Length: 144
Image (cartoon, rainbow, N blue to C red):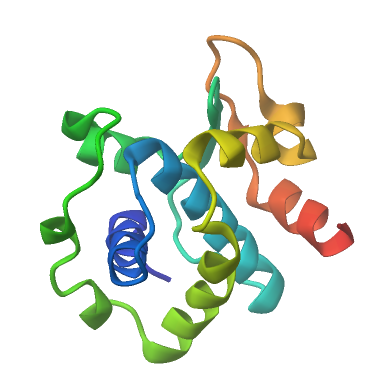
């Protein structure tokens, strides 16, 4: 299992290397999909940090705080320096599989997708930042 920050840096690297835009908002949604991918394919989470149901979809608070100084701007590639060295090759391949599917979309499109999925919808309450459980993510993606 990795830290959410290390996974986030790898996602930034993937996006930069493949010509996709990446903001903090989009990063949060991609973290959610990577977590789902790992829970389904390995039975284990990619990272231990909790994902919360915020107004604009799933958010890992520690990662949000780490990158919030960039606001809604494009995250710079320097943030991803040496990211590939922290993630095992087989896990990079697992992440790449879902990132190739999702990174092509805009942050707002990914927000809309997550808002229409049960893990976020069931956890969300305005102003509460409730946790989206790993079990709810795993159950939803196993069945959909």
